[in-house]
Length: 74
Figure 1 (tube, one colour):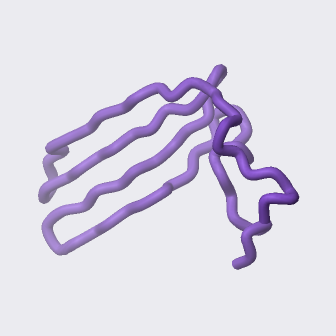
Figure 2 (spheres, one colour):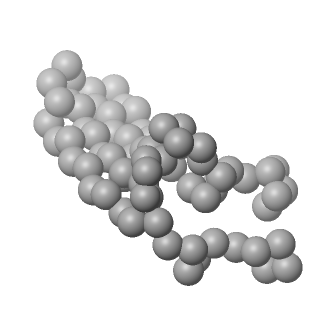
């Protein structure tokens, strides 16, 4: 996949979600997702042990273009 094919958080439309990392083992799983919301993104972390959710946390990150790559940055 080329750099231009990769989806970034800046490409997300309102309420779209991207999984930025996930792991699924025999007895546990965890995932890190980002959802686009008005004014920024919500980063969510979930960890599940067996059939029980152990950890779930979310944080709102305000929109900021500081780290957005521009076409000539590739």
